[in-house]
Length: 57
Image 1: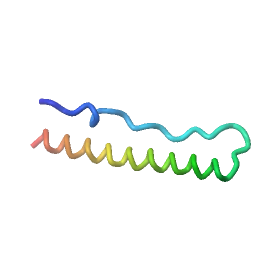
Image 2: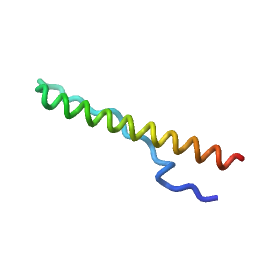
Image 3: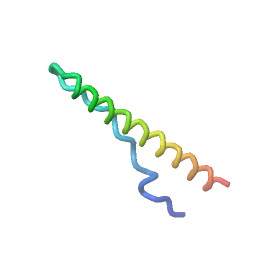
């Protein structure tokens, strides 16, 4: 059985926050990137669940 490699990949981790003063504009960029990664991970996990369900029927 073939499972697409994109479904088997791991989620990206959380965004690293620098150990220095982070201006508010950079905080906003880091937060946006972190939210993007979270959304991507949720969609990936959903795809994994759909694939596993289809394969186990």
